[in-house]
Image (cartoon, rainbow, N blue to C red; front, side, top):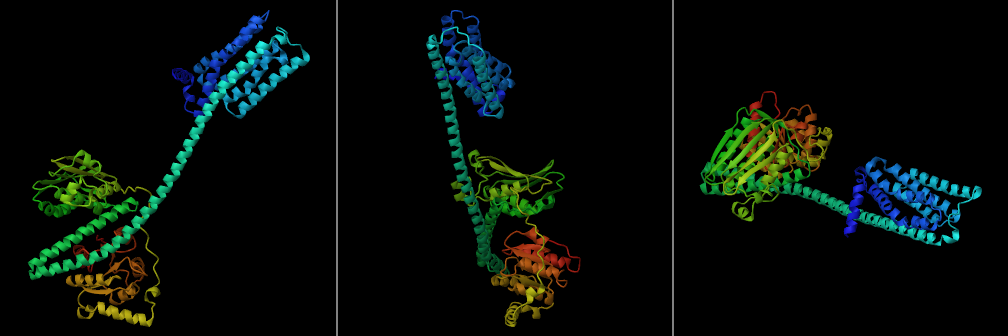
Length: 632
């Protein structure tokens, strides 16, 4: 074992550096070195026998010996001139041919026992040089010339008789033994090379099988992920629809209870509303996580006034911090100015951090620090709460992961907030960094570029699409007389306030969910509007042309003609083109809605405060040029 290690070290020392990188070339050079080290040793008995058997060995025996031992200097030449390996290998093959022909010519001619070595010439040449066309031509040429030379001597000259042929038996045995040992050694080495290549091929085949298995698993995972995304989208719709009724009616009942002074009912209704909002927030987080994983989350980059943003965050976070008797401190750097970001997503990430700080801190202090650091905005949320250990920090930004089960049991939560916030910040080209010590509090820092653009995790189609081709008006109004009668009856039943409250501004609400229409009717009536509700999107254009409402609230997901089709028809008609349209959706499709000509988007379930803000905007701009606004 030690000898093999030593020989391997010797071979590696002789192999030129620029040839060691190619596996096949390195194997050929190793064969060159092995044959040149052991070849002269194996052939040594032949010149020794000839020296003692030949009565006059000078000078043909020393020349033969010089040719045999001349293989060793080739090792030094390869080491000294590594770039000349190919010509050196060819020279070595020519030297072998000369050695064989010289011994054959002087001892036996065409009957010489040394001719058996001639078989080694093409074998060694291809082992040294490979099977290139240059090597093939070279080998064929030198073999042909060598045999032609011997045959020429046979025809036109006599071979010397230094030793009679009948006395060359020992030389023949030595020659056959030496050539066989040489071939055995080279064949054994070549066999080991083939075996190693076979193992390599088997390993490649195993890797190919593994690659196929991984590809199949990847395809299965992508299909499962697609099914998961589809399931989440459907479940989101199914969950938000009843939540819309829960939150909407609880707010209406809560307002009535506050007006009537029913204290016990107020507390119960507040709990119902809080539970519904918590469930809605969880559904929204899950849907956002799914969209980010699928690479379909689009950002609405806009110029954000940081002072105004921080004022809004402070107004919301201060009562949140006070729940656990925490003080709330805001530290603003000088010259905050503006930045390019998705204000909604950035606000969501900050709220998540502040919510966590308020939840895990009691009788302490929560600090919101904002400063501009060159081209980066740094928004830090620090608290004096329970802190997070280094081990717990490793999985802190994973989905559905909390610090430990005890914390989850005591403080609650789903473990989605931090993961979602980190992903949103990465989409904006930044990230969230954490500094924390167990028992001493935590500091989360949002770092996003001040002039950032959306960073997509993979190429995805833009969610901003051009408006659909407007459908012909006939498609919206063409219906049978019976259907028209039923439609007018249903419309009159749902809009009975048109006649009694004609002086109040009218709003057209289009949605296929009658429960939602009842809730919207009550909400808009409280805001001193006359709601005109319909669950027939085909009739929306005709109704809008007839009553000319102050604004239209239009659901996106409806059977048959969806909200985009209705919006395209409204904007294509000169009578209704200037009526403000707010899309109603369970998905955040603000950019798509604005691109299609809508004035904004109102999310389901209805948030009374945002609906009121949209209505207030209508009142403020009535009689003035219409300015496009979005409400989310």
